[in-house]
Image (cartoon, rainbow, N blue to C red; front, side):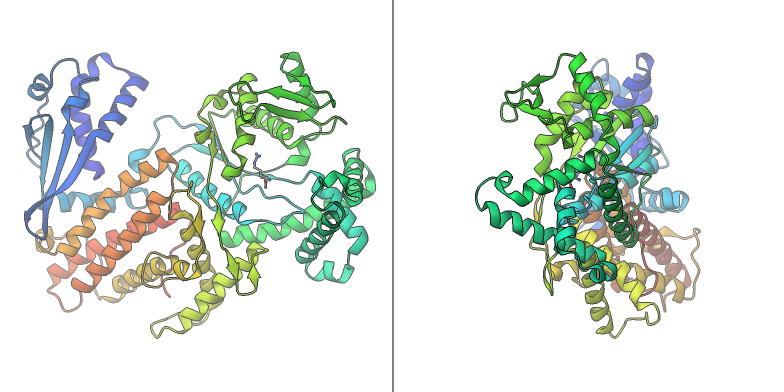
Length: 592
Ligand code: ARG
């Protein structure tokens, strides 16, 4: 809360303990003290917030303070006449901030930090090299909603880490290798319709993928896939590709190019970017080195069928991690090991985050276990930090039925948004309605996805995603556009030279200021926990508070001094709204 006050309090306390603490230790203590500073509004009259009270639990500080809390209180001189009144009660040290000082200070902070407001507090002292891997779809297989979640969550986490100064490699690890290629090639041979392939390649590839898998299913029924002749033929084709067969290579390249072009269109619509596109296929050769390495370390074992594996001792349910098939061909896990070693060498990483659905928990447990043995530094971190897990999306469908492609979801969001905009008499956009509809549609999908804990499954709902009245992308855009039009159409320009005493009794403005003061804390919570929902929930509440203040504290028709003071608060709220949307990778619109 209120970065200025927190900083002041933390600095004062730190001064008392600085003597024998240095560097990293001091930084940890500072972070700890920061987390101990709690804040609550001071209620003088019912219904009217009258300033703030910060409390520090001194007893919990004893680990970093040598001596008793009484002595601490005597040695810290926390009476900062301008801003603070300090008093101690029992185990708490309380710092009261009068309403006028608090209001003035918060508005000043937002105005001076502008787009940095919120993140400035969390700026990392020592920037780290961090890799965030997200999206990672498979070509020759449909892009599913899990990939959409990974894309949206990973992009936001990268924004958060970058915003505080870390150097972030945004990696998309394309799944362009595996049995599915053999099967798809067979589908192309058996059923391809060149015309359809030209007019809508992705749809045709998908249909072929479905058809060939139906063939497998009808041949093997409930028995293992291996019993199907079609499946065996697919495996053979894939083996030819692995051995470098020219014809298979050409086919593989064509499918890859088509899929990547389509994917890039999606990324552009979503406003998502990557710094490195890596592909599983490029690690196919390097898996031989990995296997040798594991062999040298004495970690490789072979079962009776000739499958090579590494034993994972502590994970009873997982047991073995297979790293090479009996015919010597590579596996997903082995390609992941090779890619991790490569990333480590190229980027000299301090941290690595894989944003992948929780269904792959077992895979990442194996991966980290092996990387740990290979001395990859970041692999020693807890699995839930390295593997950023997320839950499933249930019930996503469009008017045409079950979702097949991401583009269908985005198209439908766009057309639904345009319909509801057209139905609204206040809608101002007429020319570029398609573009605006798309931006809002994407925001609706992204916010619905990011609004709850990422580990939770959620049920997709168009009504919720497009709710005009609350907690949706469209609601947020309307709120921003309303503030912008008020700021530009009120006939005043924003000035910092205002008399805050004139707004101390506007309860809705005060509530808004309190909420704005919380933004730096919410930001750091999202950053530390790698949980975007904290920012989304904050954003929704901010919009409700702005709407309430907008209705009860008009600017037009007010005496100049009052209008100026109110206007400054609205300008600050616009800034915080923009900051929180930007960090989520969203573009606020000025006109709807
Ligand atoms: N392409 C994989 C899939 O769709 C996800 C890859 C996750 N990342 C990784 N490094 N294994 O299932």
